[in-house]
Image (tube, rainbow, N blue to C red):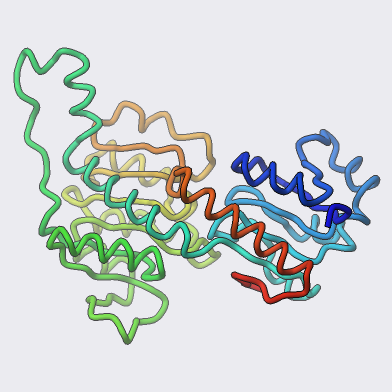
Length: 313
């Protein structure tokens, strides 16, 4: 398969890039400052695109690659891929579900504990020598809280299962009620936020879920409530979140994702009641290796005429 052209549209885990380079004729988008140069020279030989959560295949790129057969995303999210365009042109699409579910759910709980118990702030308190002058202030208990989850898919369910281990009550919002779930369902995010202590965003990013966490939801969560976002940055109206935290209308926020990554609102940097992570939900060696193997497995299956491992389109 060494003659098959594969376009890598964003930097990925080195192991994946190396394996793609071994197995295919790999083109790296960043090697061509002018995309037109890449397309004029190699468009007709590119049969696959590999991307990730921040880089995919939009309608223009799809149209510019006449031999494109498959888009494989090194992520579970595919909001950077024009799925309708792919369907219309018969282009297959795959992602990496399941293998990152536990990792992201673990991080959601860790982020929640770090936020409520002020773990990062406590670490800085010790390092700065302030402990010698007195004990750190009291924080907030996690066990027994009510956790509301926006999106009860694979990751949402894994978060719920972990939170139950802390004796937390679980409730959720999704487009439709899950008939096989015993958790309390709320038909709107505002109602969910009004009835929980911790609101966790774990749904896919779509037009409908863009800014699903808005001013009304944040106000419903309130000054004693906490927001955790391990979904996508654009799920949250960031300007409204910043003002709510500054004005004390929200108790705190734990964020692994942001609207314009890697840019983060500087107003958040000075706030004690915020924990900020650089989009590391699945960023462990073990999980990224599993994700890479799934991308490679899907490409191999496609080009050998076998069933895809994780087909979306």
